[in-house]
Length: 228
Image (cartoon, rainbow, N blue to C red; front, side, top):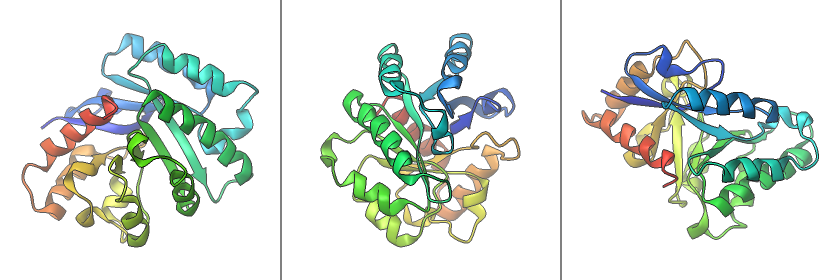
């Protein structure tokens, strides 16, 4: 069984610690991590980079960050955009939205997979998505997905949205995996060393009652690495 961590961070690259994990999608939090991640990628072919500014770190944003991000993304067609998004419980939502849209526009323009953070702000994300032509949206990975059924149904109208799960939201009471098509499911650690991805896959296998779910999830991850 082969697994690729669909969402990790610089401080914990899962494939270096878990034998069944053959690669890690590594997301940055802010611009200060971009160079560090590039160096890691150049030294390890099993790291897949996603570059962006996380909504928790928007205070780090300086003028022209989006132009620098575009230049970076243009330097390697494999690079993804992330972790970007919105968080209801963090300050300055107006700035969060501005920073998110600038980065999301680059993902749309360059057709790059997006690693999306959303906490309590799906209404705003859905409003933003409606401003785009559905056929031109990139792959969007809803990281650590834990929203309600109504939100899930609204997201499922978008063919390119996929859903990533970790230990927390596989075992939690709001788990939606049973209602998500198999070809939209991914697994992740979010850089949490306490998450065993093999356990997560096996739990999903039990929920879905399908023995080939591990292979399906692996193929799904290949899709996000190729931007669709």
